[in-house]
Image (cartoon, rainbow, N blue to C red):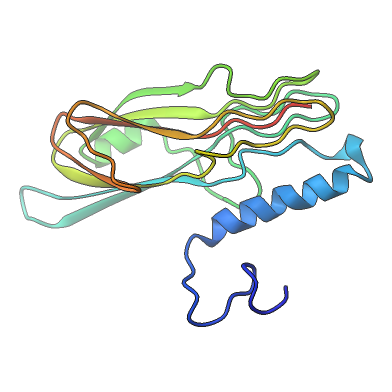
Length: 199
């Protein structure tokens, strides 16, 4: 990429979250290829790596604990099939941690883990659905979230509709300030990953 662009920035440009840029570029490449070989590419995926990072202090020894979770979202619909639901796409290279492992290791309880109905773009073939996870803090902690596609949507191909938005929900008393919130024990916080475009 040409020096000085978002793909090859120069000092003093701040850089962070390279996977978010890689996700978008991957879908842009597929969009360009759709003009030549539409039957061989997908509509736009969720195009993000939704990340929730929780941090707190263990009461028994005051040591710090950190839990970082990446969430899948919708996979783009294909010319012959619906998109995949709740999957990691392109360059994320992360896994789906079992709820039991999360709750055993960290002072968090997962109240809900579900597909977001209606979040896949409409079409002859539906875009994949995003995920929604609702966390309850079992002790005081902070959460930071990196979720894109809150204001934009994943595009569909050849008349397919866009995927649903990502989002944040806060339980009573929780204030989300741009990208983080402080959770008191017993409070909940929800993260929704985006759906994908239809075909």
